[in-house]
Amino acid sequence: MSKVAVVFWSGTGNTEAMADKVAEGAKEAGAEVSVFSAEDFSADKVEEFDGLAFGCPAMGDEELEDTIFEPMYAACEPKLAGKKVGLFGSYGWGDGEWMRTWEENAKGAGVSLVADPVLCNEEPDDDAQAACQDLGKALA
Image (tube, rainbow, N blue to C red; front, side):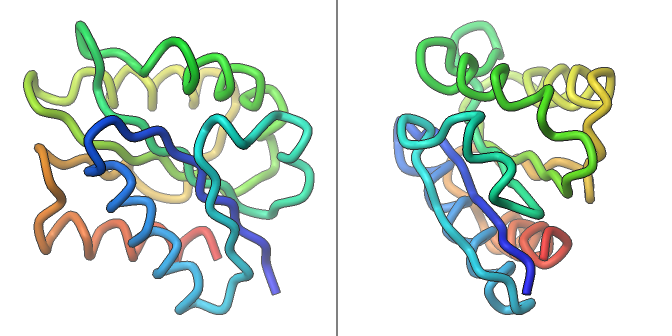
C-alpha cells in the first residue's frame, strides 16, 4: 500500500476543499493518506511518503503564499526526487500564472509530476473536484 501526503495552505477554504478531494481520490485508489496543513508539515516528513500532493492558492501578485507555504515547500523540493508529486490550488483573479510558474520551477528542480496541476477559479466546481480526485488516484 502506498503512502500519500496531501499538504496544503488555504486562506478561504477553497484549496482545503481541493485537498479533501485529492485525499479522497488517493484513498479510493487504495493508498494510506495523511492530510497536513502546511504549518504541520516539514521536509523531514517527505521520506515517509511515496506520493505527495501540494496545494496552495494564488496570493498577492500571483505567487505562492510566502510566509508559511512557500518556505515549507522550498525545504521539501530538494527531497522530492523519485517521489510521485502533484500540485493543486485555487485563485480568485489572474489567469493561473502562479501555477504555471510553480510547475515550471518544480520541473526545473527535478520534480516529476504525475499529472498536470489542478487549478480552479474560486470554489472548486464539479470538474475541479473530479480533477482533484484523479490527481489523488495518480499519486496512489
